[in-house]
Length: 337
View 1 (cartoon, rainbow, N blue to C red):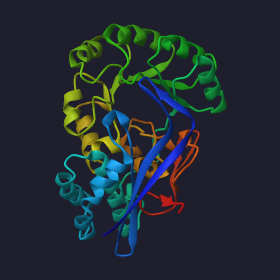
View 2: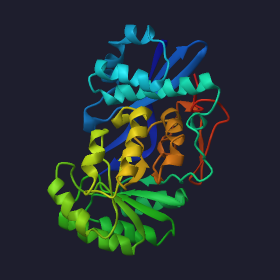
View 3: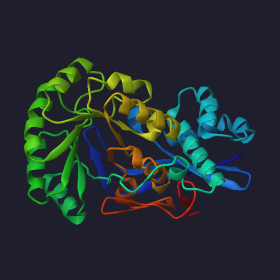
View 4: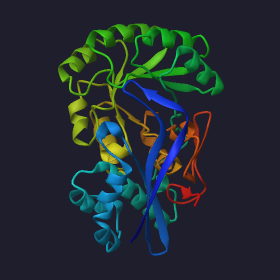
């Protein structure tokens, strides 16, 4: 296979703020794999929380360029298994290569990826749209400027209940809340009662991932379902979330791509947990890959291209929460350049 890497740095429409950081640009890395006249695209994002940068990702992948370019793809799952030990657990780098392999594989079958898996897309869940932390006035303004059926509201401030109370005055849309590890046990339990009354559907990662004892107490008493994010990074974490969370949020960049995500979905369902996929603010390349998993999901947060002022490619489109697939084989993503 031929390997080509494309680094990007895309601007956000607004400064993107969560409980622990703010940023105005999103660095990304797109990988292209070519074999037998077909090519596939994959994407991964940088993330300071996990100490991942685009230069680090490029270095990790380039170290194995000879192996990759001498590799004959048979199945993406076999490619993932062969690359995993070489990348020494660098799941972000593995993600870009794995998505590219699946895109390439589906193009070789001349079918959209969801058809390769035999999935029915007629009952796909709608994606939410994220409102980052800001002044209450600005959060209301962002909501009003972007009417949407489902919002994910970032919290982790001293005004969290006041924020949701004010936002609820301006829309009947479904609310989901993401505290990004900012709360403690009592705060989570107290907030959940108020948030339930305000029509919130669930709370994502209310507490730090290392507070398992506290999360157990929350799980047993909380008024709303809780969904794991930072507590569910890779496949092995799914089993650890049972009895602590009602569901898991799978992010392709963190778990290593589509191949492990499929296994995580199956494991979570077997454990009776809800399944969501999330966004790391990927462009349309990465988001188009997530779109093909939709028939397997209960919830989805794939609003990356909506939050960015720039993009890398064409592919899926998002209209009022509904995903419209590109009329192409593979994931449907094609780079602008």
